Length: 180
Image (cartoon, rainbow, N blue to C red; front, top):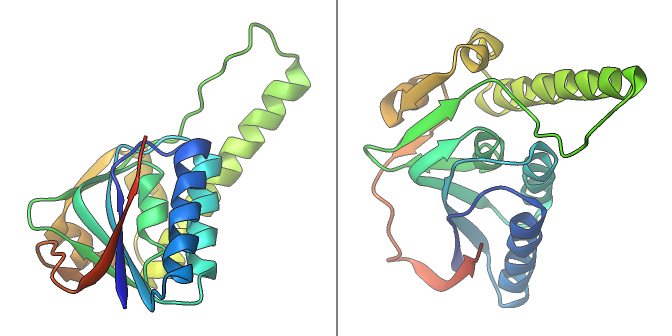
């Protein structure tokens, strides 16, 4: 049975925890595959990578479907799908990674650690794109640094999208919502 999860939220620890919970609930309710209807402006890098690895660990096929916008680290989540669909007119935004800092002061060692961590997140982002598209001939890092916007067709030409089709609930047995 196909279950559809609707994720129309920013990426943060709370929304990803909720995503994990509804996916596990779907499995407990007989899901033989999970479709994620995704539209997100991105958010927290740690949460995005956590969602990617969680979705890859599920014992059923995961279909991700860009229903409007997949931006920033939400691209990493989208790439977890064994099948990756996109609505006509949807878009993908790859842009330079950044962190927000809520601290008033930090020593040199801490700032150096943050820079290394951000560099590592960039490398992991590029590796996810290389691995999932199997297109090592594309300069994903250059596309990220250039703040690239791809429509569904351009993303399909690069292997991010496996099919372009309008989202539907026709085959979905149950629907689940991640609330923000």
